[in-house]
Every structure is written in structure tokens, then in C-alpha cells.
Length: 80
View 1 (tube, rainbow, N blue to C red):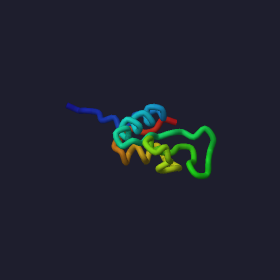
View 2 (cartoon, one colour):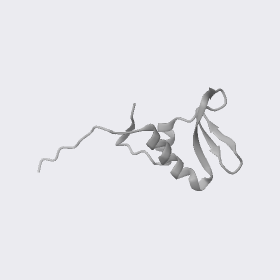
View 3 (tube, rainbow, N blue to C red):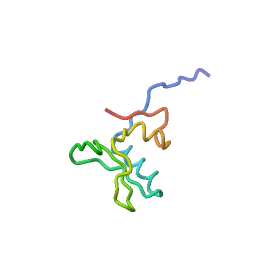
View 4 (cartoon, rainbow, N blue to C red):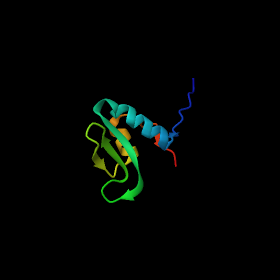
């Protein structure tokens, strides 16, 4: 009964991560968006309130946000 434990983390694509985050935030009326061009206010990624169409948070780190929302487990990592 020697079980081998795989300690390697499973890669998750950025696109899949964005979809997971958006699914979790849908009920709160929020959506993660990617800026077309870099902006000093929003950075590359930002969270938009879909009810008011205002930026709730700018300069969003995908991995950190996903872990806070619980959509990225400790056994997963963002694929390069």
C-alpha cells in the first residue's frame, strides 16, 4: 500500500481563471475585465461593477484574487 503523492501543482490557464473569478462574482454584480491598453488607474486587469459601470478595483492580481475568492486551490497554479 505504498501510495505515491504527486506534489506537482496542476496548471490553470489565465482564461480559465478569469472565467472562474467571473462565475463567482456574477451574483455580486461584478466582473473581472482586461484593459485593452495599460492604464494608470486600472492596470492590466480591473473589477467592474456591472450595475453602475464603475471600476471597483484596479491593478487586480489574478492569482491572489482567485485564491481570496476560493476558486484556485493550493494544488493549482497559474500557467505561464
